[in-house]
Length: 74
Image (cartoon, rainbow, N blue to C red; front, side, top):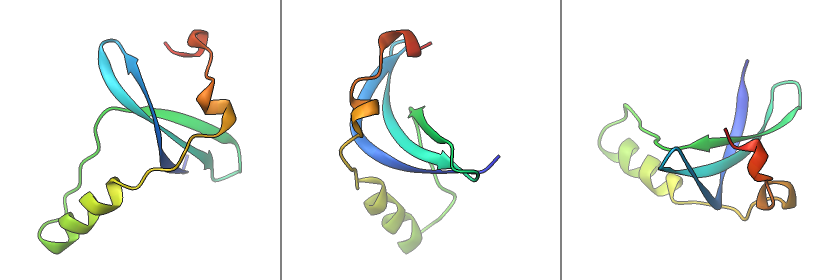
């Protein structure tokens, strides 16, 4: 499966770990959200600096993600 996601400003704590919520879609167009605690790259130098800058970009979450029911969080 391939997914495309973008970072949001929303965070949640899962098992004591702070996660950022990312929203996206599968390659077949099914909407989803992910709880991501860490993101890393193998890039070095300028590429790594650009990655870090891009990682700081965050969009407001959609209404669906803004009000995620606690029962959805494992």
